[in-house]
Image (cartoon, rainbow, N blue to C red; front, side, top):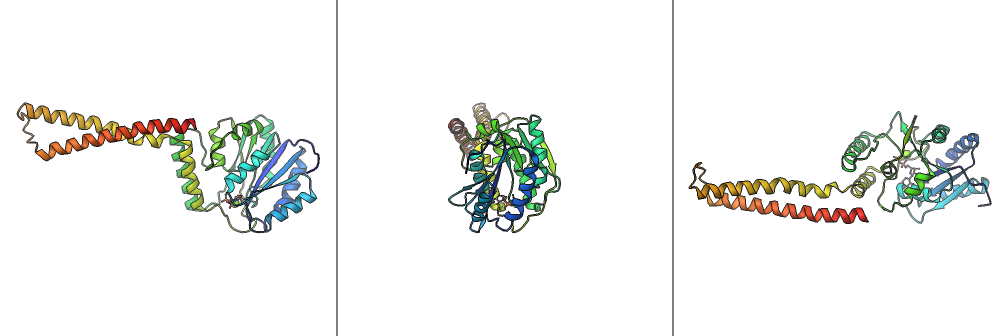
Length: 301
Ligand code: UDP
Ligand code: MG
């Protein structure tokens, strides 16, 4: 990398086995960025590609000094690759973009405009989602659940095609979780969001490698890292069971002392059942208390 002006815009592109798409992607990205009139850099993050992706980006670097290659030692997944790119970005604004051509580079000027107007986070909203039914329903359900758990304004139709201000980058860089969904973390940070609608393109080549299984695992991991509510669930159940069993037990003892005025005819096993229910209540509540302590540890770490 030779001496260069500090970029205003950093474009972060995670790449995993995209050799077939890269030449076309690079040409169209170059055309758009050359036209926006701000100093820029493009950081391609090679996420342990097995094909010629890294070599192709190396060629781009040789031809164009706006390009940088960040080479991960193995495949870490898109979220980590994007995170690495954000960490390396030197611009005042950082734009994330897929290398498969699905995010139209023509929309980039709109992102920059919104940012220049003061938005700290600009999020792309696809108008024609091409994802399969399972993935679509899955992501809708996941965001619904996450909103419930985290209580933050997380968007289900938002994508990774987004721009963040360097102020957001600074805070983002302080987050250390390893299982992460980048867009979820950015949403969680707050900040004023602006939106850019775009038409999602079909992939330039090849198939999506972010499998549904990979995404589901990520979804669960990030829900756990962003929320402590599941820890309280047993406490809530215990809080219902324990008073109920206590009342029932006291009622039965009172009934026995007064020689069964209500003619309940409670048997020995009925007493035993209530006792067991009461003990279950105690166990649930004490698990809930452990959960409380655990949630404090979780939040503090
Ligand atoms: N990607 C990556 N690491 C992976 C999987 C994907 O860096 O393990 C990149 C991929 O090269 C592309 C972007 O992440 O630039 C989106 O991946 P893909 O198209 O497979 O998933 P989609 O989100 O479109 O379903
Ligand atoms: Mg894709």
